[in-house]
Each structure stands twice: as structure tokens, then as C-alpha cells.
Length: 322
Ligand code: SF4
Image (cartoon, rainbow, N blue to C red):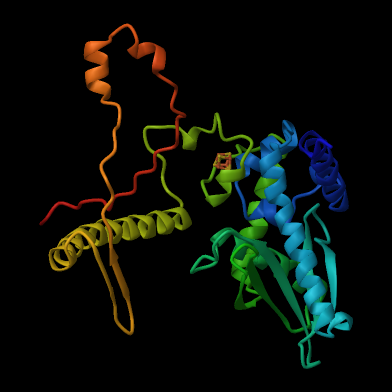
């Protein structure tokens, strides 16, 4: 049974079914469009492309996470308090949102709407991404238009299925100024689609999954302005890498002190640690330089290609001293 090629077709069909639940995306602007990049929204309508298999699978992680959370809510006995995939529409313009979970009361039964936007992640970020917050704010704004007198709140539920972690970014409320800004962005996107304005790119962590990245002007060298969430990840990576280098130096020096004490063969134990030192006998390896020098005809015949890889470098920027 060849599941690989079967999956490649079936995941496409699954994606079509899931997209179908959201209606014809070319006919309205959704909350994820408003919070994202105008160029991507424009091109996805004018020049639709199907993401590759890997990206489609990653998209479906979101649906898996939503189903899991729904099952958890049901198991917890609050099935009567929420609805899923609730569509909200702007009364005038073709602007919509699909709310993952809309509670009409708190878990203790206190009335009031609560919107939950679910995000499936690999590693829960310390702060919610700005695009997540924009998406939620747009949903809260559309809900407020529909129910202007109701109490409305919202949260973002980030879930990392691999790590088995979940985190709620809570405390969001409808904010008129934020919604107005997003509403203007949505109108701008409509203008772009009608060729009345230019859809400019804006970099975010979502560029990772963008099908229009290869010729995107802001993603080309020599230099890309980092969006804040990617900058935060890169700074963290550089800091961890720095402590790894420091740890490696420290390990080397401690190792020397330990071996000075133990000698080449040793077995010791305390209440907290086992210390074992053993001797690894010498072995033979091929000296490539010598082989190339002594047997230049043979050398090319034994070469094999080494796969290329992505090299990542993150270093703190050195600022000039005043
Ligand atoms: S790569 Fe990023 S900035 Fe460029 S179009 Fe895609 S989402 Fe927009």
C-alpha cells in the first residue's frame, strides 16, 4: 500500500473541503486577511496557487487542534455554552470573520460573549504574534457591531501538540480604535482587489508559509527588515547560541580537571552523580589530504556528494561605543 502518493492527492482534497467551509474567499475579506500581508491577499485572489504538501499538512494542524479543543470542551461538560466556526459579517461591506469558538457565557454560566481564536504552534511564543491579536480584534469588532449592548471579550489559545502544552493569552476586549484601524485595512484590501490601490508586502512570521515569497520584493537580499516576532526569535537564538558556546568552553575546562583527577579509566559514584571514564582505543581513518596527494587518480572516484543545508547565523548587532 503506497500511502505517500495517496496522501499527496487526499490532502489536497481535504484542503479543498476545509476551504469550502469558509465560502468563496475571493468574494470577501476575512479576519486573517486583515491581519496579514496585503500583497499576499491580493495575489491569492488574482493568482491563486496551491501550497505544497508540507504546507498543507501544517495548515491542517490548526484543524486538528480545533477538533481536539472542541472535544476537551465537550468532555468538560460545557458543550451547551459555545458554537464553532461562527460566521460574522459586516453589515455593509463584504468583510467576514469565522470565529473558532464563540461562548455565550463564562464557564460558570455568567452571560457574555467570549471569542476564542485557536493557534496551533511549534513552541508557544512568550508574547502573542501581532497578527493573531489583529485577527481577534477584528472578530471582536464585528461581534460588537452585531451585539452592541453585549459584554464581549476574547482570548487566543496557543496549543503545541508536540510538546503537549497549551497557553491562553487572555483579557482582550473590543477596542474601537483598533477595530477602526483594521476596518480601514480591510477597505484598503478591497480597494487593492479593485485595482484602486497598490497591495504592498508586509513581513511577518506568516511569510514562512507564503506561496508568493519567491519574487516578493521585501524578501530579497541584501537586507530584509525583520518583523518584531522574528526579531525576538532571532535574539533568543543568538543568546542561547552564545550560552552554548560559553557552556562548551566551560565543559572543556571542567572535563580536563575531571580527567586530571580520574586518570584514563575510572568509575566513581556519589549520591548525586555517576562518574565513569573509559579508554577508547585508537582506530584507523583515511587521511584525505594524503590520499589526494599520493593517489590523485583514485581520489575523485571515491568522492561522494554531501547534501547542501541551510546555514543559519544569528549574532547580536555590535553597536559603536559613544
Ligand atoms: S513573503 Fe511575506 S511579505 Fe512577501 S507577499 Fe508573502 S507574506 Fe507578504
